[in-house]
Length: 116
Length: 113
Image (cartoon, rainbow over all chains, first blue to last red; front, side, top):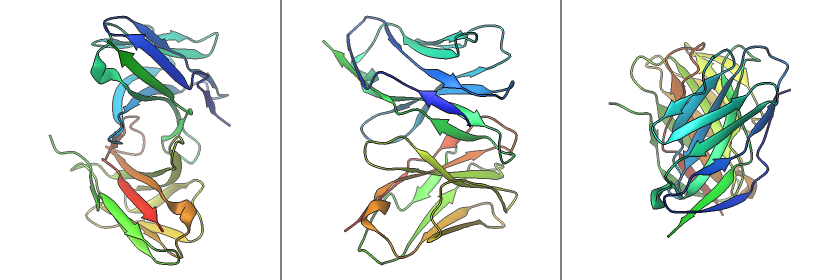
């Protein structure tokens, strides 16, 4: 079975600083994909970034980058130059091929608060 | 660009009532996933559909049923509602079953009193 672990229930960061949100995973599937989603207090799930297990380079999307360390089974999200609008819950997720589709297994999330 | 539409956005029901949640995927997306997110919890996969057939099933109670219609919209039917069914219900769609990109709708917040 696949498992996503996020060990930081809450994080604080000062505006304009960088912050790293941790995510480790466990899977026996040689082909997998990892996602990060942002969930503001309004509730919607916003896709941030995706990393495939065979991707040679770490994924980047604007201020978001994914520090993918395959041997350590970690896929940490780095947010650079934090903004007040980054305050939200962040979920790491993995796609699960069992059943033939691509359902997502989520971690428990990290609540990020950006302070002035 | 068109996004996933969910209706209603908010729903209040009493215990033992029934509820129907609707999901309209992005045009040309034939795969729909349903997730349930309890208060303070991570989203849990309920069920998925591909080309109008059930594709995969997760931790969906027997009191719940779902289907995907010919126009690819999906409905989640919930009967004998319990207090523990209070949650945010997300629908996500993807281009096909093999596509890894899932586009989430805004969710339906169900409150059972």
